[in-house]
Amino acid sequence: MVFCGKPSRSCHACRARKTKCDALPHGCTQCQNAGRQCPGYRAQVDVIFREETTNVIKKAKAKHEKARQKAAPSAAPISTVSSSSASPSSSLELAQRTPSQGAQIISPTYLNITSTIEDRAAAFFVSNYVIGDHGPTRGHLDRLADLYESDGVDDNLVAAVHAVGLIGYSHSVKAPELLPKAQSQYTKALRLTNAALRCPTAVKKDSTLMAILILSIYEIFTGTSQKSMQAWAQHIHGAAAVVKLRGPDAVKTPGGIRLLAHVTSSMLISCIQRDIPLPKYIVEMQALAEQSLTRVDPAWRAQNTMIKFSKFNARYHANLTTPTYSTQTLLSQALALDGEFLDFFNHVPPDWEYKTVYTDQDPEIVYNGHYHIYYDHWIAQIWNAIRQLRILLNEIIHALITDDRASASPSLRRDDPVAAFHLQNSFRNMHLMQAEILASVPQHVGYTVHPDTHSSSSSSSYSQPWTHFCKDSGSNCDFPVMRFSGGYFLLWPLYLAGNMPTATDGVRAYAVRNLRRIALVTGIQQAGLLADVVEMKRHITVWQDGEIASAEEDFGGE
Image 1: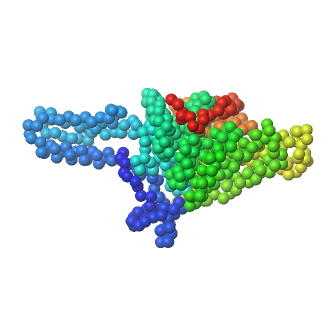
Image 2 (image 1 turned 60 degrees about the vertical axis):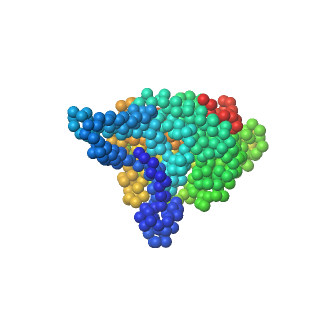
């Protein structure tokens, strides 16, 4: 694989005509003015590297043939082995005949051109975790592609990519002997990132912030205890501290805005788990970044609503110990916020909508006879994030009403029909959000492909049932290909759906089974941990066990 330079972001039609393309998300202006449908754009991460093995072989053969013709007949043969210190499999071996065998012959069968283990790990990481900013989605970790294009990849980021890539790759090819190498790369990445954080210049680089975000994924991959969740949170809070140090100028560029969005989404998880609001400076950075946006996409709107929820959630839980707000005030705020979540669902663009497929096949993976298909895992993840918060919000609404009714001096009339409606509606909302999360599972675990927007809308064109599905989770099961990002994005939605107070035994068993399947197929250890918590009907308690490292302290440690 070779780096091909910065690829054109133009659509296919503009590239063919060699005209300037403004590459707007929903179709370029040039195609619109020409009265044609814009064919869309290439995923940048897919065209940064190109397979050049065949060309390299041809060039090697031509080069040595030319050298053979120029060489004297009595010239001694040369046997050259060029190897990488990283791996013997990355060598280019040119085997040549001895004088008694006649002229030197270079045959493709003697050429061993393969990538290093590190190259394979990096490719594995990109193919499984990086989602390009094509189609309706803004992408996930797609800033990594920009950094490679601009030679903005520092050693700490390279080591972080190798660490996470090696963990996943070793599990994928069943090579546990690579795990120590992954740990070594992780330790190297931590050391280099700590050094970068102590440098006034390096701490503000995109490469440093990206490295921290990727190292947090390593903790999810290797975490077998609740303590690992604290390690993950330390990485995320370290990333938030870097956002603060980078200052306002860093969120005035598209790349900086995308990095901020990644940090904010992870910080939301940590803060909501701890019942605290998002740090004020993150909220301010988010508002400042929005001023630089030419278009506020659905993901950004969703994140703004999530920020509002984190603030309300913190207010509600603080009110439990230090009453400041009345039940009516909190209930009114909760209902208004739930209305905003519902408004998001009702006003997404067409390519953000999901399709529902009904089937009686594979009930072990298709819960209740239907499943959803989204454009990609990233859009499904946004939907599920809103669903999770609606579950938590409606639990609060339910608790506000029931706790008030049980109090010595209730502020709501016991026979109030409006309160009774909201009580029943909160239960219905929780059940609906749970069902929709479960309907997203098949696509996340590789049961379906994303819909082809140019094909018929018949459900059969979207179904890709497993041909050798087995009902147990044994190592001999012939599972389909599961993109690791699918399992990664599904962990917390599936955990919440299975661990809700209203979860039935069937839902709980389904959540446990599929969390264990994710752990088995992808090697994401935290999936197995969450499966155990759900099965034992327990909760994550580590969030309250001590404080996260200070924002100014060294990141992570070694």
